[in-house]
Image 1 (cartoon, rainbow, N blue to C red):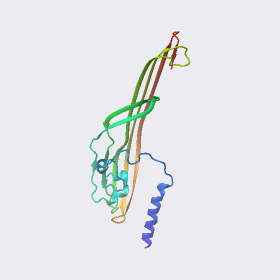
Image 2: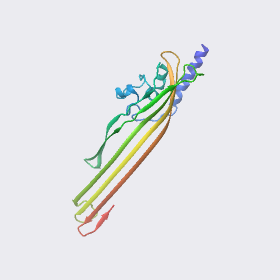
Image 3: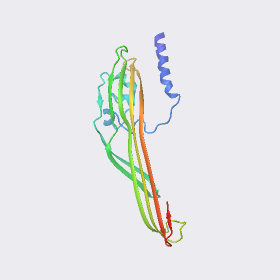
Image 4: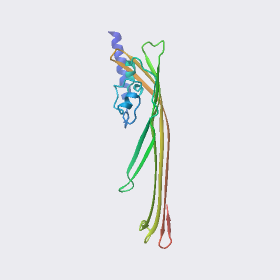
Length: 214
């Protein structure tokens, strides 16, 4: 009974530590799909995952999988649409669509002879991949610039691009206490590459040949 009590204390400590400081996360589980079951169910899996997608969704589940196999998500393609409401002016939205590869997962398991019944897994996954490139050009005649008297010939150009790729390299450990109870832990190293660019060019030619440039 004393051994069981000590084990329960260890489990309680391990389960409590992650909650000492927790930051909010948006789209933590459902924005991307990892593993065969998650892909087939559009990401609606958490604790129930029964393949190596458990390294991401629920590492404790790894201890309950009898024969976890090596997994590699085949090349998957997705259509991504980004929309910014009132991006240029009220009622003028910015919309961009991209077709390309979706985030993927490579994972496998291994064991250590001196740790019986302990299960380990390694994983490489693309957590996020986004690309956005907007370009708008406007040419108008009229009283566009309020600080210039009369009408103007106005020419404006706006360009914005953003690229971000986040890769995770992880190691997962899990141990089954019983057939229905196990604990697990996944640690990841995250590598993020991100770039942003903004170009804004506006010119106005007034009736008196006066010029305004931004």
